[in-house]
Length: 117
Image (spheres, rainbow, N blue to C red):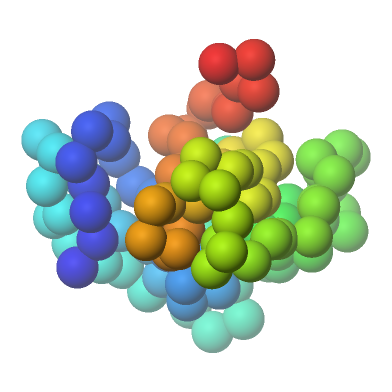
């Protein structure tokens, strides 16, 4: 289902489903997909399904969160230079690939994107 190559063992939100599902990577392989109950989204910070207002974008609205990262507009990778960062925040980084598609990387729980590296 999902590419887990190079990912640490753990649960990751599925951005493509609006984070209403999440999946487990184990030993670099996709292991299983889980569904959040209706109305909830996966909260990568605590590893459980939560109300969208308690979860920062792109999975939730972040209304009830003290500080959410700025949510820049995603770019269109179709004509972008490979390596262009289309979207990034503390938990998710999307990088344009050579074929015009985007590669979404989600940090493991408890970690954040280091914009310097």
